[in-house]
Structure formats: C-alpha cells, structure tokens
Image (cartoon, rainbow, N blue to C red; front, side, top):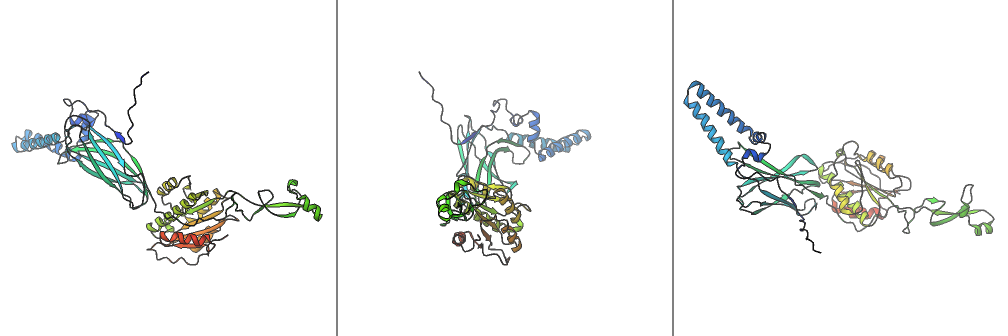
Length: 433
C-alpha cells in the first residue's frame, strides 16, 4: 500500500492576494476590483481635480472656439493618461511576515521582516509597501513604515527588515501590509492589502529578588498561621470543652488525669494566597515614568512569587492578573492601561480584598502623589490575620513629599532598589502583621 507524503508546513505566515486577471485583459481599474467602482477608487482627490479641469477646459474651448482652452484640456488629458500608464502593473506578490521575538522587554531591540516574492514568471514593476504597527497604548495613531520594493524578476524575492518600537511597555500588532502603486504626481493610487498580523508583547522591565516574601503563609508545607481552629492538622494546645465541640477531638487521657473535659485545639493551615495590588489611576503618579516603575515593581514581585511556587494574583481595577507561567503573567502586565477613578489605590484594594478574602499577604504598589490618608485607608482593607507590605514608588522627576507613612511601607526610587526593599520587608522591617 502506497501513500503520498504531505508537504511540509511553513512556520511563517504566507498570504497571497486573489489571482489577478490575465495580462492581456488586465487594466489598473480591473486590478482594483469591482469593475468601474474600483476604477473610481484608484483616482485620488488630486486626480479628480485634474479630470474636472480637463473637462471644463475642453468644454470652454469648444463653446468659445478658443484653441488655448482646448489645448489646456488636451494637455491635462495627456498628463492623466501618462499617470495611468505609470500605475500599470500586476500585484503578483507573496508575502511572509516574521518577527524576531514575540516577547520582548521594554528597551530591547526587536525586528520585523517582510519577504516579498514575485510569484509570476515575468518581471514586476517597482512598488511601495506600507506596514502598520499598532500599539495598545495608542490604538488610534498607528506607526506606518513605508519601503520601496524594487523591480523583481520572475520568482525573485526581496527582504525588508524594519525595527519594532519597543521603547515602552505595550502590546504591538504588526500588520496589515499594503502594496501601493501609483504615479509621481499622485493622481492614481492603487492599493492591495494582505491581512497579515503578528502580536508582539513588550514586557515591563523586571528584576529578580534573592528573597522570597514568605508573608503570612498558611499551607501544608510546615508553616502555619496563629489562627486557632477546632479541626486541622497542626496541633497547638488543649482547652476546656464547650458545648458544640466535636467529641472526636476530646483528649481522653488528659481528661482522665485532670478530671476536666479537655479538647484538642489546632492552628489553621491553609493554602497561602498573595495579592499584589497595583494602582492604575494617573492621579496617583507624578508622571508616566513613575507609573511604569510601579508596573515593573508589581510585575517583578508577581514573577518572583510565581517562580517560588506561590499562589499569587495581581489585583488591578480591570480584574485579576494571574497565570501558571511567568511569561503569560507578564503578557497581561504588558497590556495594562491606566484607569482614572476606579483605578485608584483605595477602590482597587477594596475590590481585590473582596475577591480574595482569605489572602495571607497583601502587597500594595502605588505612586508618590498618593496622600498619607489614602494610604491608611488602603491599608485598612487588610483582612484580619493577613500580612501587609506597601511599596511606594518615587520617580526621579517627582518632587512630591510623601509625608508620614506607616512603618510597613518601603520606598523604591528605581527598579534596582526593589530587591533590597523586599529583603527588608521579608525580615520584618516594614511589614505589618
């Protein structure tokens, strides 16, 4: 029994436009599609101005008998025909869109490559290519890269390498790609688009900390809380029996020796939960750089706890940032946007605690313009028995005096200071229990 092997699948996205009409019947209007409607679309506003001037000049020349007006109209007609001839040509292109890395760090160089290949056996005329790059931070103002594709021989190819704007944390959508052919005067503009798009995550800058914030751990790994409960795994002490206690926990030997009914008491052991609250209100920060520093601090803390195997959640106004792997969590931090009002520290902290009432460690990250009263109000959202640590970022350009803050707050002026601040918090200096 014989079989036919399937062709290997390319790892790059390839997109071809619809097959153009045969060369002997192709016109610039047909290449635009939709017949004469496509022909009307390829003429620019300047081209329509030339056409109107041509018709008016010829009409005036015929009506008045002035040959000068007729000559002007014929000259405009000749110019328009030359521009149409310059825009002729087929779009027999196959495109491949490739990015150097789909996950980058802010400030790290990135590149996108476009490979243009002539799929026909005939030489193609030069054309211009436009590549749009949209950022989640500014969707309405995409960056446009324009390059010129030289004349390609049959089955020839041309590679274009363009830089990816990675100066700031964002999510980039690279694409679509458009091929443009026209004339030097701008009377005719033919456009064919390829629906290619690649998503690139520009992660915030992060730093690794040598110290893991143990916090108020309540799990089965040998660390327990100080909350006493009637039934658990970690024995703590004996106490007098009260009506309603489970008889299974009565310590009969001690009861027989003392003559008083005694029951076992345990320490609560539960799975620990760490919540990292991040304020996203622009009013809580002196400038954009300070906000980016806060995002980097929150992402660094979340990544460190996730690598240590802790259950950690990033609490923001838009919801929870969570995942099982650090790259996926950083993808969510890359897409994080500012939110006025509801993104302030106090409502964000309240919403996060409401979603996770059994948290063991609450970390709040905020900017230098948050007042001491707002900080105290946010700290008051801490559930009973949980540990609290505040991280106040103070950008280099900020001249705001933070005033008195509680001893459970550490200040970070640059990202490199975060491990030292977390280390001091983990050793008990700057942590409220």
